[in-house]
Length: 313
Image (spheres, rainbow, N blue to C red):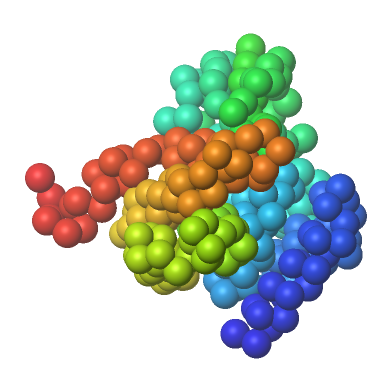
């Protein structure tokens, strides 16, 4: 835990001091790209606590760094199938994205891939789960979207009889998905925490009727409820990083709704200034809204959780 907190402080200071630093610089200076890569493959060999700490800080700063898709999902995909050479490339700062089963209509015929992944996170290297196999392929076309949250770009990937490089067995894709959900949940906690901090700061500064608005009971109750929500979300995210499908589903549902609530309450506490372009509050609401669809909405996570709670249908 001490290492995780030290890493948290390093990442926070780095993001504050070098907000425009590239992923390669961040990967080199902090070692974030190889955080989960085994030491024998050039990484740090860290675990769930360190993953959660870094993801929280990235979410708190609304960082555009591709930590989620590359340092978490792509690394886990490479680890699960023993793709050592790919792990070394990722630890060195190469950016990859992962297309999970069901994330499009993709068909693998021999060593050729055809179809469309309509919504994929950005990445120079594209790893695709298709036909029970993990493959690397170069899309025939990449079409970027104009997204609500510009800090998390999405693109459409088209494959037309595209040659692939087989990396290994694709049976570990669910663990890749669950770890991605866990990392996203930690990012959501970081964003929600920052929304709470902004709301508290404003409530202490803004005066009405000769006193800070934070002294009014209605504002106190809002902030107290928000604190409980954020801390509960933090517990759910921490459990997901070291758990399985059920823990990931809990975090995916709870942390998504907690972030949406925190972002909305932050704007409400700020009042009129909270909806202006100059204030950062709207950026957190946009990130929270886009995050709510990244691995499916909260209802989808609860549907996955149901069999664990009630048993098979």
